[in-house]
Length: 455
Image 1: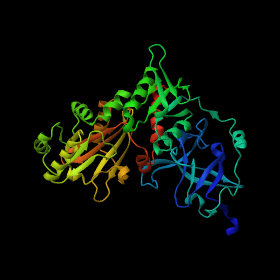
Image 2: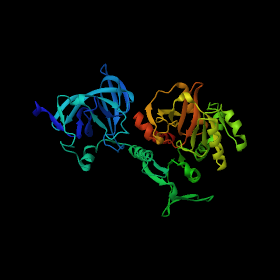
Image 3: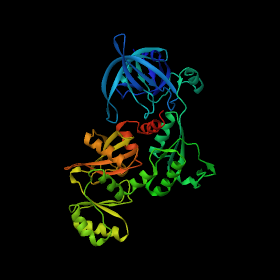
Image 4: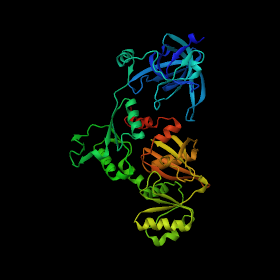
């Protein structure tokens, strides 16, 4: 019986003759029940009175320029749960899989795998009775060379030439920045990482310019994605304004980023748009501390530094005496602070809605570590998928619009009074939300740029 089985490594190249896919690299995963293939533009249709589905695939990893148009009989539409716990409705097709000299029919689901390492996942249902897996090996049945890949796909459709996009940020190794660069390249764009500290400007009415360290002039960019850390907001926004002066499309404008970083001003803008927030107080003098505490309902209460970020500079004062001490200590350092009502019933949880171009593309619930009240992922908080209510979606979209942000992380807390807005982040991190939801958020950001250029 063993002699009849194909021995595979943890990664193998296979083909799908009926789909017109000559070769594709697959992750061989006996831990996954269902096989899955990367697919875009999925659309069901009727063929000879039976249900079919058509879809596009970029069969080569990190290459969006090569496209195969496929169609296959539609077997089912079912809910599939990913390894991260995310549930998704997927179309299921049946087609022939060929590995080495062996071919057999399999079922597989269609899903966007842009954020995953492989275009194809071979699950145990497709392998049962036919395959043995040696997880220590790879490519036991051979692998194509870059030259043979080009030859195999020479007749496939080529995607149109992309845009020239700059990612204006500080750390190229940060997960979010790497994913944005990768997503842009996978969608066929020319991506450039621009370190904020290595850029400088020429202010001139006729020929404004931005230079890069070494004297290179940064021109002919179609779009810029600003990812500015709070400590360099002033200079990062100055550069973003300079790109705007050069008529370059910026995914978030300098004005929107600047006002989002001012916690007090941003709360005033949100309130002016009719968005509810926890009761908040602001005062300049330590002499007003007592009234400030009463204003937000007494202790326990939250004290926030206006310049804080990622949960830093946020303190929970559990008693009136502790609140007075923290407020007066900050005031003695001439720090600007907000005093805010503590929402006890939230139990250390909040909701992060990721808004892109006026739409909530993903949402997670963040939960603080035991003994901690701040749910930020950077502080050890955990993320899980959550279904947000229509009201919460409406608040998130309204908040991003009030701040004039095309990309925003909107933090909402559930209270006994209903959902309340905590803050709006103009450079939200991708790692927690992509990891929890298995969604290609970086790709959605690139799509927002494409939409502006009507691609």
